[in-house]
Image 1 (tube, rainbow, N blue to C red):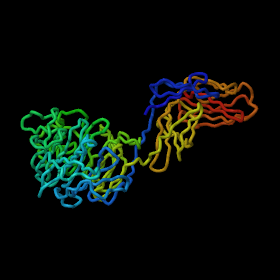
Image 2: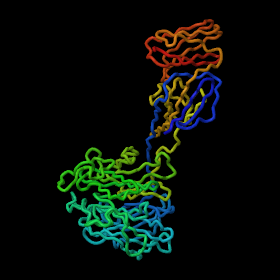
Image 3: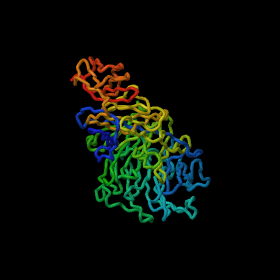
Image 4: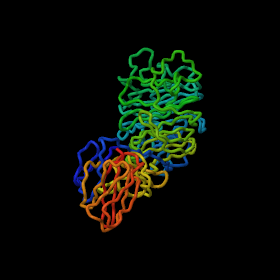
Length: 569
């Protein structure tokens, strides 16, 4: 966050300006303000607002939902594992007639933990005009065969033509688990599909490092011809290479159950489900078609895969490392569920955050591209199986165990507090509670909506709106580089610097008693005295105070003054 700067230079000229920008129109004071001699520039301290999310129920009564997406309009399309796609038209509004029902073609045992079934769908980039969409499902008995098929919507926009299926791509599965199955169109317009390693344990067929099979890989196809075939993009990394499948775009994936492209940047985020020890979050930048190898089965997370021979494996540097890993034993994670980067308009605190979870732990986290994590919500609820975006970029999460879809919202949607400054007093916007900070440290006792700064530095306020909503303002840097006076009522103060005692002498004896207060650079009052009526001078004991800059403030019924002083130098 950019800090704002409040600066007084001699006289009464006070200006505000964001760091690195020109100052705004001057604001003029009529009263004395602080003047401290500090070396510039100095550090700007800014607390960050860690976002918190809440889950609002959006649809219920669903049967083993595993994915949700949009068709470029206000509807959500909900994929159910048994082979049914339903339409959610609004909160708690599920259309009774399925959009698609292909249960006769789909292999699925019916249990929540089944890894077969209808696993995802994606709409063609030109769906509004061509009506095409694509699904991934397991067909056939036993371990089955993966199918990528294209369908067409019927004349009724809420019902697909189940007879329009064109099977574009198939791959026999050696085992019933680790089917991957997420379909996405990338920012390049090509169709991506993530395949698992084929299943069982420890990748017994060695598919993870085998470029002659689509298993354990992400493939990329050009389906723009809209016929019964597909083309291989010329920029696929293994086009023309021997003993490789040209459709492979990335390799070394164990089970990339859910992945997504950032709709703004095109960056790829993959939640690759781990084996017995680690879950991993992978990242790959947009536009890089160099064929990333994410390391399975040689690597699980950031380590050599436990219990797997490293014969034929390269060094760790040969593989793309995950940006974050999660431990089964200590963190209770078991199957990472990749999500999306939030790009919706409703919740600014969430904007740009990649949000994901785990099937067992139910922890919702966010990550940056370099793996900086924030905890958004701890639910301890198992069963979240997928995320989805609506047309506007709002996010939803699917609970396969509970049969629900929930919308992700900001638990603290109120605006961040804003600080204003009138030349004497800092003021925060409305909240329930406040706590002021100077240079990142709490100012003891500064818990009102306003605060009168006593020292140069970076000021922030934490505004409380009730748990869990404590939000910080942007910092406001107060700089005063010249002394000015509001009149003749400010006394002379000597010596400077003061070692043991400081003397305040007025030009004429005061007709009113005054309160004299001494503040340190943190704004804490460290001494207080009374200046009696009819006296010219008062002495303040400063022995034992830490050397540094202080502010003396005097006040009585006629007004107030402030002046910077120095102690112990």
